[in-house]
Amino acid sequence: MTRARRSGGPGVDPATEGGRIGSGPGRLLVTLYAVFAVGATSRSAYQIATRFDEAPLPYALSAVAAVVYCAITVALVRGGETARRTALAGCVAELAGVLVVGTWSVFDPEAFPDTTVWSAYGMGYLFIPLVLPVVGLWWLRRSPAS
Image (cartoon, rainbow, N blue to C red; front, side, top):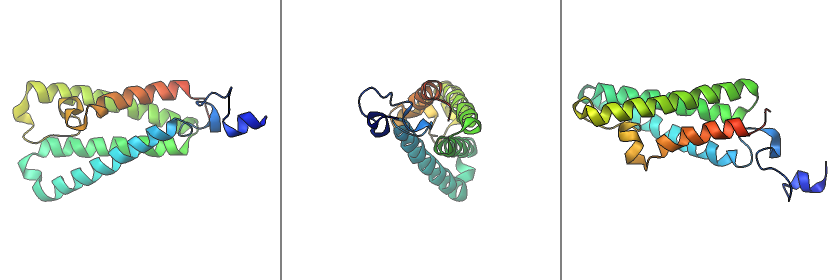
C-alpha cells in the first residue's frame, strides 16, 4: 500500500478508505444518525413517561423512530456484512416510516395531536429524516463491503 493510500491522499476513493461503512464520509452519516438516535430516544422517553395519554400514537411512533435510528447508528459503527444488512434494513424502514407517517400526518392531522420526528416528512427537523435514509442507502450501496 502506498503512502497516499494510507493517508487518504490523491487517488484514493473516500468510500473505500478504511474499508468500513462508517469511515471516511460515512462518519458524517454516523454522526447524524447518532444525533437523531439520542434526540428521538430522549424525546420519546420523556413524552411516554410524562404525557403518553395525550398523544399515544405520535409518542409510540417516536419510540419506533428512536429504535430505528439506534440500530442504524450501531450498524454503521460496527461495519461488516451483517451490519451492512442491518443498516440497509434500517434505512428502508426509516424511509418507509417517514413516507407513511409523513403522509398520514398531512392527511389526518387529528391523529397527530403532537408531532413525531417523521411527521410532515420531518418538516420540524428541516426534512433531514426524509433525506437521511436516501443518503444512507446511497452510501451503503457505494461503500465497499468490510
